[in-house]
Image (cartoon, rainbow, N blue to C red; front, side, top):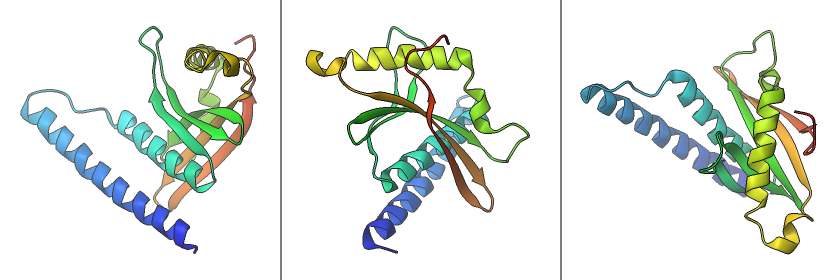
Amino acid sequence: MRAAEHLLSLEQSIFLRLRAVADRRAAADAERHGRDPKPAHLLTGERGEDLAWFHLRSLGYTVVARRWHSARLRGDLDLVAWDGDTLVIFEVKTRTAHDLAPAETAVDVDKQRMLRRMASAYLRRLPEPWRDLVPVRFDVLSVYDLPSGTEFEHIRSAFPLNGSG
């Protein structure tokens, strides 16, 4: 293992442990104040996005946004990263088991439409001359957080920027 990989692995391990402690404290605080704790599926999704962030960094992506949202639109962009000169919008789908249908099947036409709108809003934040020149790609990253370890399935160019969805 290279030194950089070891440091990333150590950083990931520490981060995920601290995250688990924070999640437990938040659940205890919610219970103490008579509020419902964050649902398990949301915690699973957040953990998957954390795992995806470390995975993409280890592959050389430059992650520039996590859970980006716009006040004017419903939804968020899980991860936004540069792959060379291409801006990649990642939709992360996390599962704790391999189901009959792969995780990426949850990115249906409605989800694609929402992601396109969110990506357009994100691109409007870029300086004018770059806005229309930046190549954009939508990838789906399925994260399987299994007892035996974490598995990733990366679908590059899962759907186009301009489409019927």
